[in-house]
Every structure is written in C-alpha cells, then in structure tokens.
Length: 70
Image (cartoon, rainbow, N blue to C red; front, side, top):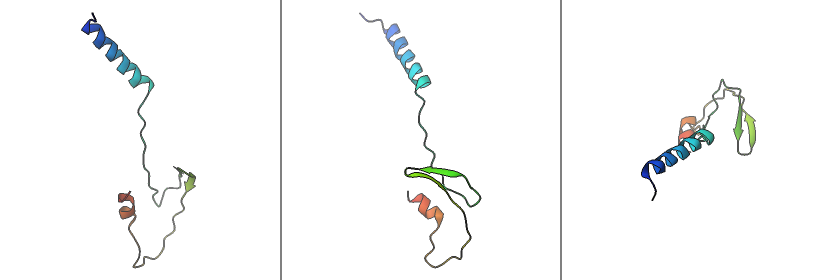
C-alpha cells in the first residue's frame, strides 16, 4: 500500500524541481515612447522608431486608442 506521507513528499519535490528548473515565461508588450531610441523585437524582426512631430488632422487617432484595441 502507498503511504500518503511519501506520496505528498514526492509531489511537493516534483513541484519544487519544476518551479526551479522551468521558470515561467513572461511576455512584455512594449510601446515605443517619443524619447525612446531602443530596438524593439517583433515577430518579423527588430525595429527602431524615430519620433517626428507632425501637425494633427481631423483623421488623427490617439495612440492610446490603438494600443488598447489590441
């Protein structure tokens, strides 16, 4: 018969080993800011943005609206 104490010890040991050797993956979605010249990684490659101030038009959309729709 299986002793419940050793069963729980084995399960806890397995969870501890998995937690140590297989860390969780965290994906950070980053949006570029006007002052940021960093390289951003995308699915298709790496990109760098250069900000340039332009006049607003009637058709201009907010970056916050575009970012929140994803």
